[in-house]
Amino acid sequence: MRSKSTIDFIGLWEKLNNPDFKPIDFERFRNEAGNNYFVLSPQRWIESTNALGIISKSGRYGGAFAHRDITGV
Image (cartoon, rainbow, N blue to C red):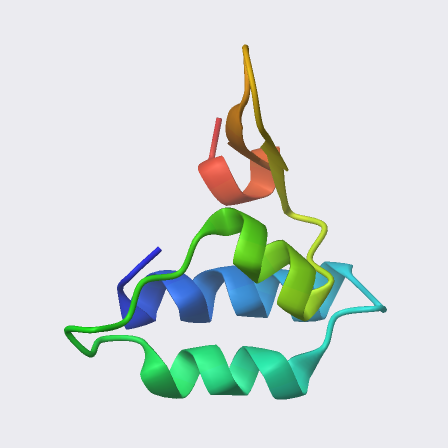
């Protein structure tokens, strides 16, 4: 989740499908994306923007999972 196009795509999906999405925090990530120092974890994305399209689980059998519309599967 480092490239600007990935952040744009996920942000657009959230704007269309999530009424509780926080667009102000999204714009902050969008402006920082593409810089060498920018790293965005799925957990930080979820907590900051109130995202629904990505789920992050920690521990055994954990990982980051995306909605079918996002993955294309």
